[in-house]
Image 1 (cartoon, rainbow, N blue to C red):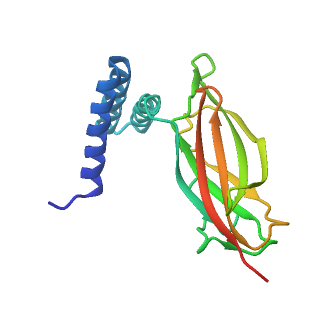
Image 2: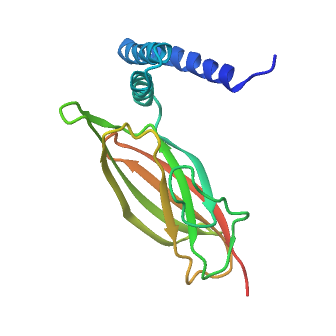
Length: 199
C-alpha cells in the first residue's frame, strides 16, 4: 500500500498517542484534548479553534520528548529564519571562511504563564574546536544565551552559530557545540567534522 503524507501523519499521531499513554495519563489527556479540539475546529471550519487544539497537542507531546537537536546543517550563508537556509555542498573551508551551523533543538523545557499567555525557555551554548589528535584548540562556555518569551509555543525554533576559523592550520577538525537546557537541566552535544584546506 502506498503511504501518502496523510497516512504517515496519522500513523505518527497514533504512535505519539501510544507513547503519551505509556508515560502518564495527564500528558495523554492533554494531547487527546488538543487533538479533539483540532478535529472539532476542522469540522466547523474554525481556524482559530483548530490551531489552538494543534498547539495544545504539540505542547503536551513536547513535554514528553527527550531534549535533542534535529536538522543539523552546515550552511552557505546566514539563514533568514526557521528552515530557511542554503545547505553547504561540503565541509572543506578556507582559513578565512566562517563556519555557519544551523540546528533545531526540540524537547527543551518550556514554561507557560497562563496569566499573560506567555511561553518562555532558557538555553545556553558551549563550544570546543578539536583537532585530529583530540586536542581542544579553542573553546568557550556560555558563548550563547537564548532566554526568550513568546505568545506562541516555541515548537518551530532554530539556532545559528557562526564560528571563526582564523588561525587554524590546514587539517581535520571537529566543532563540538553543546546546547544546555537551563530550565530542564539537560544538555545535548552536536559534533560536526570539517577540514581546513591547505595553501
